[in-house]
Image 1: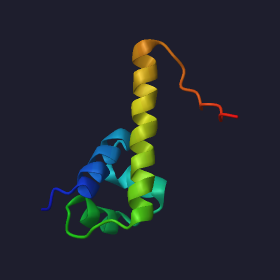
Image 2: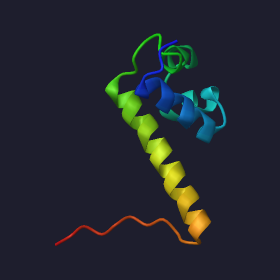
Image 3: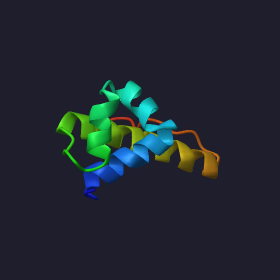
Length: 79
């Protein structure tokens, strides 16, 4: 098993989703293929990796907001 940033991110996102099956369903990737990415047997395509990163970021922002009693918001664009 390779421990690349891609495989670690996939495993982390799977924990946030509850399982690798749930992550696969959420991002629309077959479970067997996602398992190959998670194990580092194959490298995830960039679109899959970016979807995984989005899940991690969303989960961690929500967790920080809960810990600090704030609600996550989308920053307003600068003029």
